[in-house]
Amino acid sequence: MLFLIFILIAVGCLTAVYRWRWGVFAAILIGLLQDPLRKMIPGAPGYLAMASLPVWMATLGSALFSGEVTARRFLSNFPRFAKWVGIFFLYLIFPAALSASYGRNSWMITLLGAVIYSCAFFVLACGWQFPRSPSSIARILGFYCLAASLLLIGGPLDYFGLAKGFSAIGTKAMDMVWVTYRTGEAVFMYAGFFRSPDVMGWHATLVTMLACILAIRTRGWARWFWIGVAIWAMLNLWICGRRKMVAMLPVFWGGLMMLTFRLRGMKRTVLLAGVLFVVVGLAWYAVTRTYHEQAIDTFYGSTLVDLDERARKHGVGAVVTTVRQAGFFGYGLGMGQQGIHHIPAEKPSLWQEGGPGKIVAELGVPGALLLLITVGVMLKSVYHVVKLNRFSGSFFVYSGILSVLAANLASAVISAQIFGDPFVMLFLAFMVGLLLSGARTSGEAIEESPHLEIPVNDGPSS
Image (cartoon, rainbow, N blue to C red):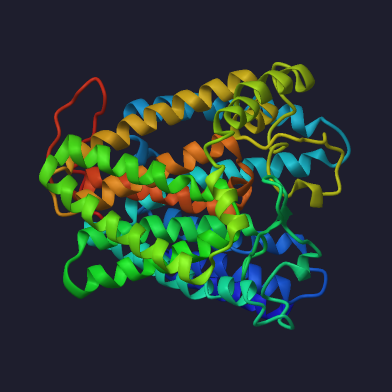
């Protein structure tokens, strides 16, 4: 099985070298298959959680070598964003020096951090160059939804105990049982083909959101097909037992409704509300007929009860405590990444769960502020890209992706553990690039403004 995984990675890398756009499809496929294949190997080696990373890197190398993707060409389209990206990466030299000199073999962690941040930036640039037309975005998102939906079948198999002897399903291979007694009753969490309930919950949430986007932009039987995919994903989301994943959906739906009302008016908002009402209504009916348990209903019903307390604890509270422990400049580059416990190096023991605490622990207060500013400038840019495409047929795709990103950012404040997964972070970075590509593929001119400068006539898109 280990040999099979290496063969798949090699085929994915060769595919990416041949055509880098195909490499994105290969990276998505291996990112989904890596967990069930890993669990079928005795000991479930931790390094296989990064099986998709070599394919992403091969894709980047192929795209850069082809000349289609260059940092200069990408950043020249977004000068304000480019300025803050440059300042942020220049600052990373300081936390890199901190972590490299932390202790024995700590340079390995520094190298991992440098690879993750660099790959995230260049994957974003690849996402910007990837679409040859706006419909290309719908195709890649549809591919992910279909591939992930097939793997989500492991959720019901795990829940009903239909594959107890199959190590690829459940968490027995990880020697873990996820259960919570937060509401006084035992609520078991299920992982299906994925390595943990968090991972299955994130994929189920993302499939739900993307399927809703695809349902809104289509008509007829295609709309009902994507509505069915969204309902199927919500069934799996319900049994993962992770409230933070379920809480992402209201943020997504609320953001998409607000953008639609602001940029397209009431008529389109009513259409959107109708589709979402059908999805939620049918999904709830399916849940009550399939997975109805008082314990899990009570557990999800308590989501809003301690939301403000958790936000304070993992937000401001975690930042203050982290600064006291790690100092003003933090522990250094890579120290906040997930999975570094597998690296035989001297390193601090991090306890932070929320995103703000993890970022401050790794980059320090100055780095966290620079990252916050950079993300803020990026969000302003992507909003103006959505506004630029408000009358195009791809409006719901662009506004939907922005709402997906907003939902993930909101979730990261409470818990950022899932975003330490290389596939999750790189795929989200790729989606940011897809969204920014709306300025290039729209075929419309945009005037310079204090918010965004995008020269869209930059030559062929491929």
